Amino acid sequence: MSRTKVVRWGKNLVIPVPSDVARAVSLTEGEQLDIEVHGRQMVIRRSATFARADVEAAAEEIIRERRQHPLPTAAIRKLIDVGRRPSR
Image (cartoon, rainbow, N blue to C red; front, side, top):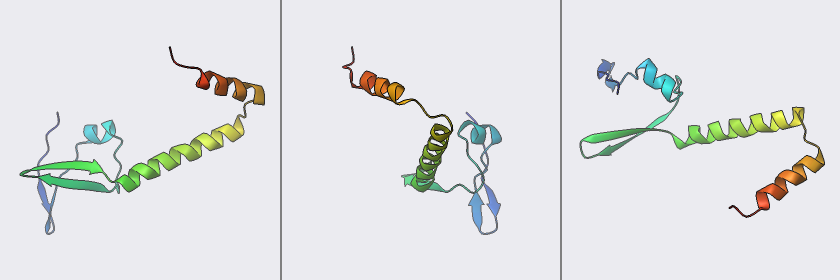
């Protein structure tokens, strides 16, 4: 567990995120976060728009990689057949 201290920045209160926590969750400057209040507790989560952007970026990378390293049709058919087999 990491600990941080709330500080004032202009008219706002700011919660600095320790670098070890930021690295652990791959948090980068400029990301949007959602804050929910539950009684006197708060929950901070990544904004869904950024999560979707991460997924879209990963999909684009997979597509680029596939174009650079295409599989032969026979290999693709075999993968599809394996995926259709009932699990044991």
